[in-house]
Structures are given as structure tokens and as C-alpha cells.
Length: 355
Image (tube, rainbow, N blue to C red; front, side, top):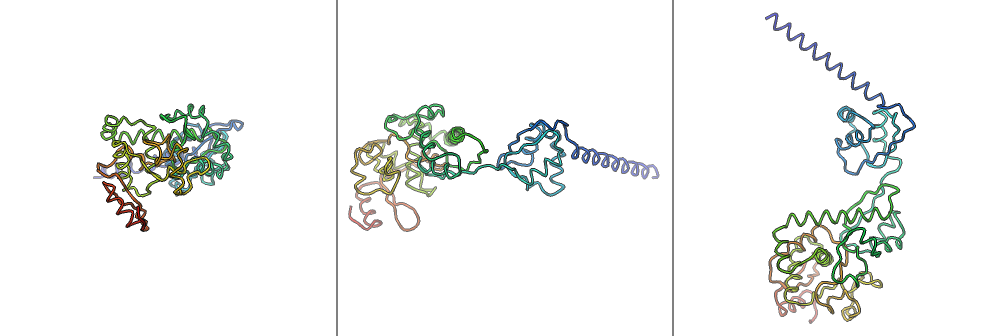
């Protein structure tokens, strides 16, 4: 019995000693730099949305700290783990882990520039967004977006009507909120946006591999066609549940060699820039994007589609629909029909006019 008590006392004492030793090691570590070279400046980028583990690992990889565990422990014990701010930092090698933690909590002296590309933005809206974020002048952005050599550098797919497109990069700037490190070139920012599109399209193909394979076999659709179709879907509806139905209408029309007759294509031009169409726009045969005048896909995308529209273009619903008309009832929804007579009745009902 006495021996058991003795072992308990020894075990507790040993545990206390080890805890005290670990705490001493932790406090010494946090107050001492891993280098004494104050002349060496190290740039560290903490991306938006980084987890505590990711932050600690970035600092370790940049040789600012050498114990991610102790660093995480410090932030957790002081209840400041959620106060670490993304951005660009410059530490000297003699910074202590305590110094680094305090600076991360205070925030960067040069924070990220934020730019949001909304779903359905066309190149003129993209240029305006980048200009508003201070990343370049609108004319500079548009010049790059229309530059064939830059499009080649970005490796964007080229369609059959490439000689008629306004911008080879239209459709391939993925809608997203981007956090841009200060000082990045406009070219690098745009390339990153195109790379995000490539990632999104690749992942969408994987998610809908069976249907995508059927489309390849049935109509031989290429990546450029997918993005072009997705851009039409994007501009026709903002309702996620309608996108695959809209896609089915376009595919059904394509198989029957019918005109797409989609209004958003009517004003995709340098002078109209996607403005609301007028009846006169339907008669403009000079506009190669006019799907009332020209069969099949327009020369290229008319906006930059989001994830839902890309997926709808890869996996359209299986329907017999050939027509749709906006209900204009405040829901943003559409009425779908399989024949022209029903479509005319729907037009009379929802648009209050004779076809």
C-alpha cells in the first residue's frame, strides 16, 4: 500500500517536472529568435482563409519559426488564434516568435488588394473592377484581354470563330473574390484568374464525367463551346435550378439546327457592351454574336460564367424543351415549352403581347 502511494507521488512529481520543463522550453523558445541576423529581411505571404496550422507551416517554411506546435500553442493559450490577419509581411531573421505573433495579430502594413469578379461580368465590367481596385487602368486591362499573344500565354481554348471574337479571354476569367498581393503585375493577376477557370472546368468535368462523355460523343463539344454555352446560360438566368433546363433548350436547338435566338447575344459588341437589347438589335446581321441571325454558337463567350453555369453546360437536363420565356413575375423564373404554339401562348401570357 505504501509502495503504491510512493509510486503515485513519484509519478505526480515527475509529471510536474516534465510539465515545468516543457513550459520553460516553450517560454524560452517564444522569446528567442531562431537567427541573430537582423539584416536579412524575409517576405511572408499569409493567404486569405489560411488555417492556424497553415499559418504556422508557412512561417516554418520561410524559416521565421522552427516550432509550429509551440507557435500554435501560443496563439491558442492567448485566445488570439482567430485574430491572425492575411496579407504580406516582412520579418527580419532576428524576430522572436512573440514578435511575429504580435505582428500577425496587428495586421500587415501592406494588406491584400481585394477585387471581386461577379458571375456574368463581361470584359468591360472586368476591366472596370480591376481599375476600381487600383490594379490597372481600364484601357490597360482591355488591351491585355484582347491581346492574342497574352491569350496564347494564358493557354485559353480557341473556338472556330476566333477571328470574329472581341476578346479571346472573355469567358475564361473565373468569377471569384481575389486577394491580390500588392505589387503584382496586371498580367499575373489575370493569369491567376484564368488558372482558376482551368481548375473549375477540370473539376466540373470530373463531377459530371458520364454526361460530359455523352456530349462529346453526341455533338463533339469542345472546351471553348462549353464556356460559350455556359456564358449564354449565365446571362439567361440567375436561378441555379433553371440553369440545366436552359442548357437543355440550347442543346435541343443545336441538334435540330435551330437558331439559338438568345437576347443577351444581341448587344455583345464594342459599342453596346451588353446593354439591354432593342428590337433593332435583332436585325443587326453585322454583329457575329447575333444568334437571331447566325446559327449555332456565337464566336465566343459573351460573359464570364460561374460554377453553376459551367456545370449546367456539361450536364444539361434531359428534356424536349425548345423554348422559354421570362415570366416577369418578380421571381426571375422562366416558362419552358416544347413547341412554338405553346411558346406563343406563354409569350402572350407573360409578356402581355402578341407574338
